[in-house]
Length: 109
Image (cartoon, rainbow, N blue to C red):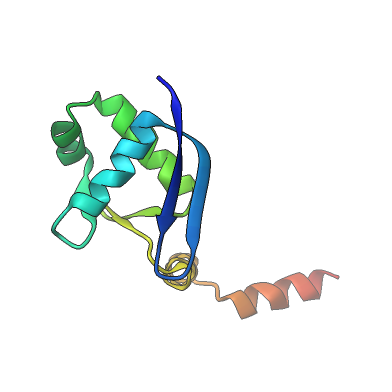
């Protein structure tokens, strides 16, 4: 399998991956094809792409590491159109705001 260049135009940024595998590109393309607000699941992606589940999972993990996909509920993934939403979710999950984190860091100096 070869590699391809993927350029994703999202709400607040353009994500460019110069050496995505063809299966990573196929998985992220499916989110554009989904009619339900760019949401999908591993089983749906596996069926639609007729791809091994292990490859689909690896591709989803790759796009999560690139801050392009996030899991919004158990097994449901969506595109992160705006990084501010991602940061707000991370802060809510940790219970620490960016300002509080800065204060703790400053206190350690």
